[in-house]
Image 1 (cartoon, rainbow, N blue to C red):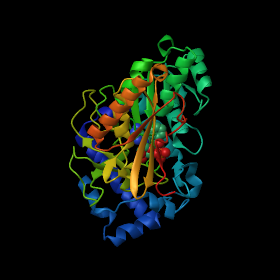
Image 2 (cartoon, rainbow, N blue to C red):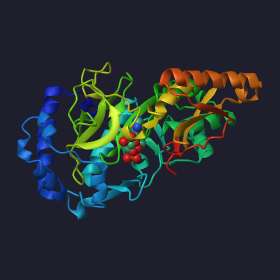
Image 3 (cartoon, protein in one colour):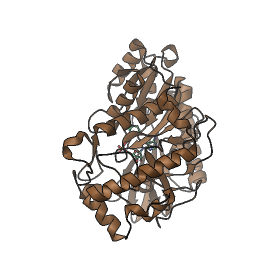
Image 4 (spheres, protein in one colour):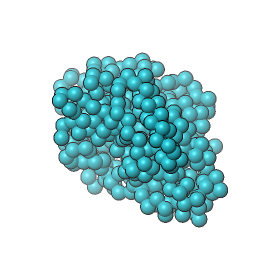
Length: 432
Ligand code: DLL
């Protein structure tokens, strides 16, 4: 076991002492260095010294994405500008990007937690890791890259896209691990089939998939089609990038690297902290980051926390995999719906492909949902009756499991646009 990996198996009492000390230091630093935090703490009458126990964090105010935007680009810096060595940004849906900064120490933390992420999926310095996340302002590419290098792997900095070249390198370079979005990997599977490349005949054995929600049904699809083991990796730019939490071989939630990132689950409406096991919005406080620490950052991601020891032996808390965000919920004729629910239904039915899109329109004040689903080439060339039966079956399942009537449109393989990064599953035309 490497020295880094040992950090995943620490005694919880010792971990909590370390967290408290680090949290106290962080609160003190931001209060004294960042006017935004001083004002936010003062406005609710709390001081860093009010944090006597970890639970006292609940007294402190939340930080939101809008706070980063309002202090664009560098207003939340807690370090001297000269100590910043890297800047990333995540593109918001509207307007200015959210900017995040790193000191040299922050990059060290990041490569450490990404290294632990890859170790949790069984990688060692013998592995050849192909990075299919985008490089650039997005944190995916460089974040995973540094972690893999820290582990001593041979890193192939492919970046996103270039599907056929990705496949060529997997075959010729003997890539053992691939890192990309799950939706892009389904595209790699598809093109591999087309050009007659069988992953089982290559050295590829594991994939680290994240940056977007994906279901257990998708994991099964990926593992069965490609023969590799699929691990879920989670993170967000504001907290560090990828490397906030990681799946282990038990696949029973993602271990949060709690010695750096302190998680809470809150009720998104009241802001109250919820008990372990209860579902709610995930909130993180960074307790070691220097350049841009985040205090109680609201992620909008829905999850729950489990503190029981994992079958893998890790003592770090597990967060349930993020299947939805509070802001990707569609309300259609009063029914709440998440794209991931549709994904589970589709992948449960024989003859479909994991390429789908939800199109929402409004006609005469009535919301209409169309679910476009690709079918397999075999089904597509079958008789019309087969297609009709499949459409009726999907429609009935959506009605039964999600409680909504939707128009199902079965489309030819390859019709829905493939993503190289995060998939765009929803086209909402109601407000355009
Ligand atoms: O997506 C960081 C990342 C890169 C994570 C590569 C994993 C792999 P952002 O662009 O800031 O950062 O987007 C963060 O993506 O709040 C979630 O909503 C979503 N997300 C990230 N990982 C997962 C995952 C990167 N494993 C936002 N499952 C987060 C579900 C995920 N959602």
